[in-house]
Amino acid sequence: SLSVPVEDVREVVGADELARVHAALAALPLPNLEEILEDHRALVAKRLKAAKAKVTRQLNDLSRQIAAAEDARHAHPCHLCERRKEHVNNQRHVAVLEKERTFVEGQLREELTAEEERIRGIISGIRNVLHRFNYLHRGYPTAKADLLADVFDTNGLVVCEMIDRGLVDSLAAPDLAEVFSWFAYDRDSRFANTFSLPNHLVLLRRRLEDLEHQVLATERANGLFISSGHNAGFYGATRAWCNGTPMVKIIEHIDLSEGDLVLTFNKTIDLMRQVREMLANVDPDRPLRETLARAERLVRRDIVEQSLTLGFLPIQVDDDDAAVGDEE
Image 1 (cartoon, one colour):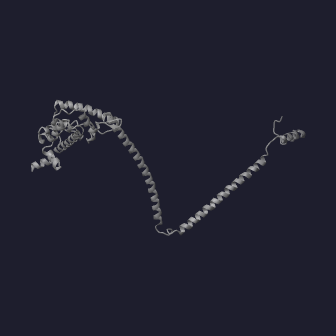
Image 2 (cartoon, helix red, strand yellow):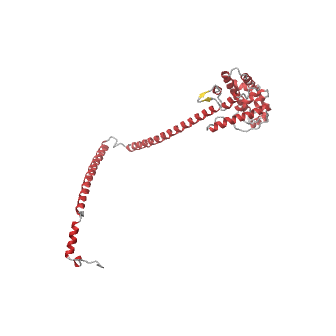
Image 3 (cartoon, rainbow, N blue to C red):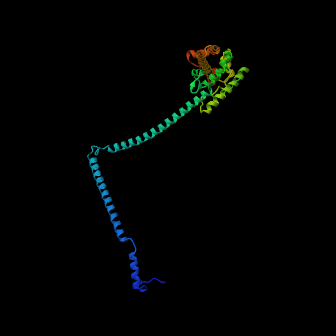
C-alpha cells in the first residue's frame, strides 16, 4: 500500500499489470464524453443561429416600421403645426376621461345593482307584513286589502287595522276626530300640554299602542321603517276644538302655535276623508261613515274653514314682535 502519492505510477506498478488495467478499462462500456460534448455544442450553436436569425429579422422589421413611422410623421400635415403639443395633450386628456368614465360607469352599475337589491328587500318586507295582517294570502290580495288601497298615510296600516278591528266604531264625532288627530301631528318636537282625556279615550289609546307595537315589530323584523305610530304628546286640542272651544283658549293649554294647530286640523280632516271614502267603497253601510262626516264638519269651522277655502295659514307673530307692537 502507498502512504504518499507518487508522481509516476509506473515506478510502483509493473508494465504487465498496467497493461492489464488499460485493457480492462478499454473493455468497459463507457461513453465518449468528448463526442457527446461536441454534439451538444453543435446542437446549441444551431439553435442559437436560428434564434439569432429570427431576432435579426424582427429587428430589421422594427427598423423598417420605425423608419416608415418617422417618414409618415414628417409627411403628416400636423407635423409642422404650432399647436401639435396642445392636440397631443388633448388626446391624452380624452384618454384619461375615457378611463374615468369607464370607472364611473362601473360604480353606477354596482350602485344600481345594490339599489335593485334594496328595493327587492323592501318589496319582500312589505309583502311579509301584508301577509301577517291578512291583506295578502298566498301572494294574492284579500278583501281586507281594499281598506289599505285608498288610505295614503305613513300610518295607513295602523289606521286600517284600527278601523278593521272596530276600535273607533262607538266613538262620538268629537272623540273620533280627536283619535285621527293623533296621527295628523307628525312633528318630533316636545311641548307642554295640560289637556286631559276621558277614561274611554285613555283606554283606547292603550289598545292603540298595543296595535302599533304589533305593526312596528312586524315592520322592523322585515327591515321596514314605514309606520311611526301616533304622536304621544298631541292630544286634547282637536276634541276641544270640535266641542266649540275657541282657538285662543286651546293655545293656553297646549304650547303650539295657531298655525301648527290649523295645519294639524287640516291633516285630520284629510285623513278622515280618506277613511270615509274608503268605507264608501268597501263597506258603505257602516255607521262609522256618518260619524266621520260629522267629525269633519265639526273640525272644519272658523279659521280652519278659511284656511281650507282660501289656502292660507294664520300669520305667526313672534313674542318679541308682539311686545314691540304693544309698546307702539
